[in-house]
Image 1 (cartoon, one colour):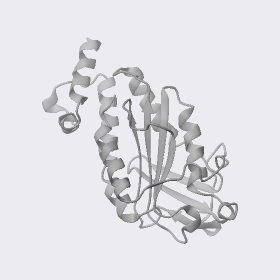
Image 2 (cartoon, one colour; image 1 turned 45 degrees about the horizontal axis):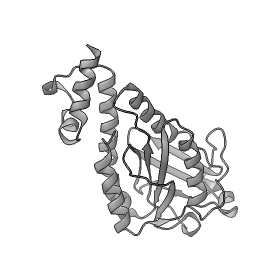
Image 3 (cartoon, one colour; image 1 turned 60 degrees about the vertical axis):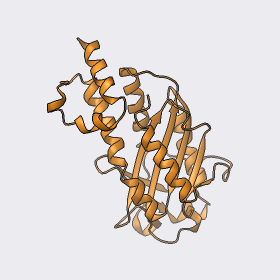
Image 4 (tube, helix red, strand yellow; image 1 turned 180 degrees about the vertical axis):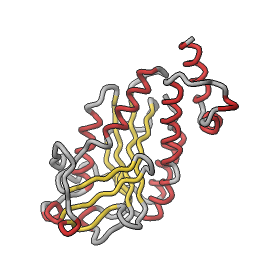
Length: 237
């Protein structure tokens, strides 16, 4: 499964160019999480990440290739303790899985990994994710700031969630708070979403007439997508 690999390569290249740093060990343990999203009122907050008119993006990329050799948490831009006002924000997750083939099991595994991004609730860190626009906005409470919240600890909470999912081997969580990098990498959110939605199309057993398929541009651009589509069509006959 390497449908997202070209995007993963771009993310690695652009974050490296932007001065990405490894913050995996900046916190000893994961930030505490709650069972449900915690309400942080505007007057209780210190600032918002990706809120208001600032750009934001969020997406998950999956591959069986060596795209994430080890678990890690990475940052481009200021960390939470250094942010003083609303700013741009991106959270991109890159997941290396065991070989899960090109089957409905593979599709379900990817959906489970996608699902996880909506179900991590760090305390004092209110997340609002829009699946339609691939945006993620975070409101951080003043109390969480006082207690020392940072992206390393929040990232560890996400790592634990993803690592609990079947087939997942390694996970990289990348936080970005530099506006130009958020805007640059935000362009790939739709492509990643289109690939996932194309998989839905394939496993729902819909028509394989390429001339009348809304996802033809995706198959034309993403290596291996068309072969997977036609292969699954044969299996369902």
